[in-house]
Length: 207
Image 1 (cartoon, one colour):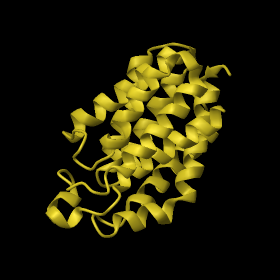
Image 2 (image 1 turned 120 degrees about the horizontal axis):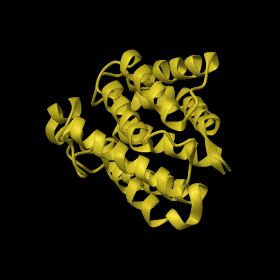
Image 3 (image 1 turned 45 degrees about the horizontal axis):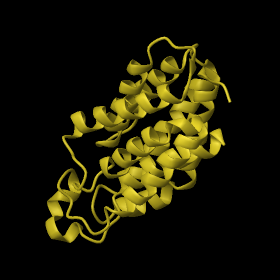
Image 4 (image 1 turned 120 degrees about the vertical axis):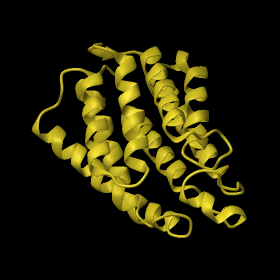
């Protein structure tokens, strides 16, 4: 498929639908270790992204991602807004003014998103955050670049699923969950789960 601005907008719509579908699950995951609002916050943000896209779709993939970034930062409370906003903004910046994306561009966007989240959240793999899903996803995407956009996104989604599950036995070292210390063990990180859900939605939409 041609991954132009309209296609990137379609991926965001698919992501928004998935977040809406899993809104309660994400909030339930957040309840014992966070502010009980991850699902509601993300759903509000992505609903606003779709609403803005319904008005007008920017001309480039970068423009679409920048729109998503600014909307999420302004509409989503807590840590999720700045982190996801930074991820989309860094991805947008690395794409420049390209009118259509190839596999290498998508890999670069995922790597830039990861770098942005790490810089913003000061988290590493093993801290029980969204980085535990996004880092292996970016690595899997790079390893699968020769399989095209659909193949690399599928690989990224699989890796993100495994990465999210890896947060369950971890002691959280960042965010509200870190206040619980050892009591954070046994909980799936909601940010890692939402990251995996979004990447799966993108992969399914491209496929």
